[in-house]
Length: 397
Image (tube, rainbow, N blue to C red; front, side, top):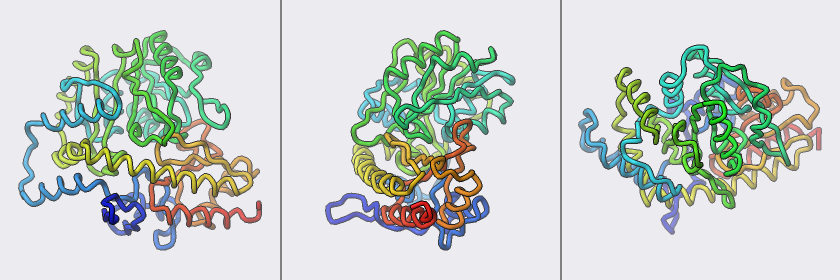
């Protein structure tokens, strides 16, 4: 990434990702009918920014060495994870708690394999990240949806309502914290309620915290691991991939504090012959550093400004409402106030505005009137997206 005269990242730089095997840009036309020639890719959850320079140096060093053998001695990698969790999240972890998986969708699938059986119920608080639905169904487990209510325009975790949705087959809760797509940073009280619910029903909690570093100013994320009374049934999922925009490295951390759960998970890892990708390990080790931390601080300030520009534009379109974004770079926009059916408002976004945005129903019950927009892109594109949306819905203004 280019730097300005003060050495800070230039997030305004426009980088052409078309024709680079980018899911976000090169698949937008077959999926949404939006041409990358004049369209804006605001769907797949990666950013249009280069990662911090320390990550680039790590990859160049590997390329310069020129030999790409099996990775050994991961002590530096584990130490970097430990440092990051302690420094950025106030969470002290042991080296033997850490397993390296091929991204957190893989980590979620591994947890399903290790801790549940076909036919077991897995609780999702919907709407929620669409990949959870896919891997649960593919594993032959049953999704048990607990739709989230909204208070003051944002989702809340109301565990008092969950019992009525249970079938008796439940063995696991998958928690998305911070929440994707709603952008909530759950309160400590909400997380304590989830822990109490899990104890009451003897459930394992898999807490996917992949967005935990991307928290807007004024909000504080609490790792589920810091909640009392949950350690014996908790699996933590974290990763550098969303934080540093290195999703293609397919590296993630499954962190298991409890000995019994750790042995079960380790046994499945061994049975499947899983080992880390050396590029991902080198990139993660470089990213989890003071230089990486400074880059993330600059990034979150930039994303916060993007959020304000996008929200202001959405607020000027009658019938549209964006959910207050407390974390992530994913804006969840409700079109129900337009009075349009789903086919019409999605067509206006794709065909008139020429924007590829995620479809709300893929996130489960409660997503029907929504689209998810990725604002992790240069501000000029955010401003252009706002202009296009205003034009697409100009008859409402």
